[in-house]
Length: 244
Ligand code: SAH
Image (cartoon, rainbow, N blue to C red; front, top):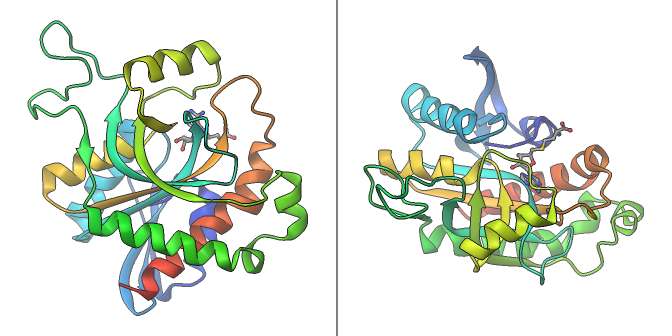
């Protein structure tokens, strides 16, 4: 699953024996990627949309694991635009049913976050590391320079998801004051992780940092997605598939 139409677009070109089907306002591309039966779909934005897409992948297509890619805003001060975060624990930062249950707890599951399997996290970290070695094959030096991407890195860290695009410092502070260890913020990961948890299948969440989740994020968002983030997703997924 990709959180941007542009990023799934590049990957669908690598699918062999491709077939395409529309369902519930989504387009599902089915085929083989590196010989592995795969379905590629744009998640759409926000927790509900991503959860519905994940559920459909599991029930209609019988997928046995989900790999999610997209962009995110940095919360951790060590992160720069162009870095990659592989999700460890996934929080829903806007879930708050206090005083009925502790803040962030997902009703009826008794969990404040969803873990991703360590072996999957490790495989994604290694794939991103291999991708960075070949990054110039995917992203031109001019584009890397435009976004000031010099020595991009990949880290494993916790991710917060919620139904808001975080672009104000006060909002960022509100999230990090409750979840101080969280690396980045986005709008889908923890919803996909919840669906995977409920169906008992593994999930991997891979996020490219596109902004600093504040007013000063001077990113040309559409251009970053088209020339950088979408190529990251393509490259990292292809590297990951080589080792499955
Ligand atoms: N391309 C769209 C913008 C989509 S933004 C447009 O131009 O209108 C929403 C996507 O960016 C979601 O997938 C979300 O997960 C991610 N995202 C990136 N930075 C974020 C931030 N600072 N806060 C929340 N979500 C962010």
